[in-house]
Image 1 (cartoon, rainbow, N blue to C red):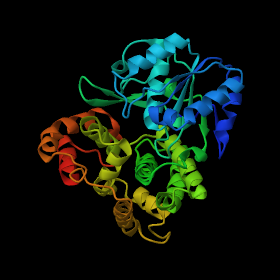
Image 2 (cartoon, helix red, strand yellow):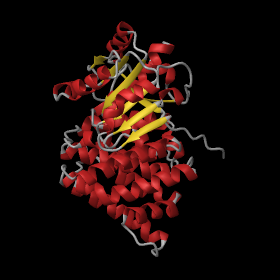
Image 3 (cartoon, one colour):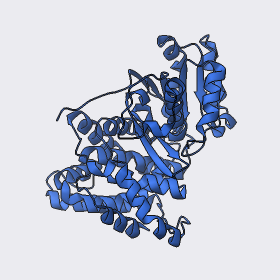
Length: 385
């Protein structure tokens, strides 16, 4: 199998890196960037800070802050209007996964036209798009290093995976100082999201030596630092380590794939508006247990990297310890079941056939070590409730 490997053209990494935004824009010959962010980043002054950095570099910025959690097809129009009215020549995605997903969609639609359903997998789009600069403020999505965006089609309540090099940021600025104010719940959800990216990239049928190295490194770091960051948000060493791991995990799955957890997670987010990282965390223990028979040695490697098993432990023992590790981690960071999150049981059960169909249609389950049937996915949905 030939692996196609793609990364951002360059990446600024480290505390305070956002101060280099002006030089990044100069290197890219960008003059009129649109800063795509959310109301929270405007309210806490972070967006204004970036505007001043951009202006100090002699550039002319504009701000679009009407992004929404789990962006939808309808939420994009105002952003497209902002791109056009500013005559933007680049898009800066600033925030968590949702502002960056929005920025990627705007970069493509503003140049290519059409609607987001046109770019849904299995199509892989590498055509015209504005350059994207990604600046994450959470340690989880890894979107700053991936060639994907996720947009919900409101007509069908489907979270659409849209892949292709045109969605890959040309530059990323990974500054752990931007994550210092993350509350514990967000720290936990995004951290487990990064862990899921790393595990799924490593066990994916599309795994390769490059993605393997990144995934294993990310898992080792997450095993050491996630709980530290969750328990003490002022722990700068833990925050920086988690930021690096998130980016590594993003690079890993962008160049391999995600698997069944993500395939099942997207319908939960679309139908019940559960945050993506949290829905991954809800699914990770059960889906991992289901999948281990298809790649026991690889799951055992995951356990060893996370510190859940020793190097000399058998694969069978180590893979079982991985399940224990994930269960304990999810308990430690207080991951709720859908039932405890307020999801109605009757509606959950009624949507299981549709969610199973949508999960399979996303393509992600086909990369899983054990490729599930629709009935098996449905049973997993019942089990995690």
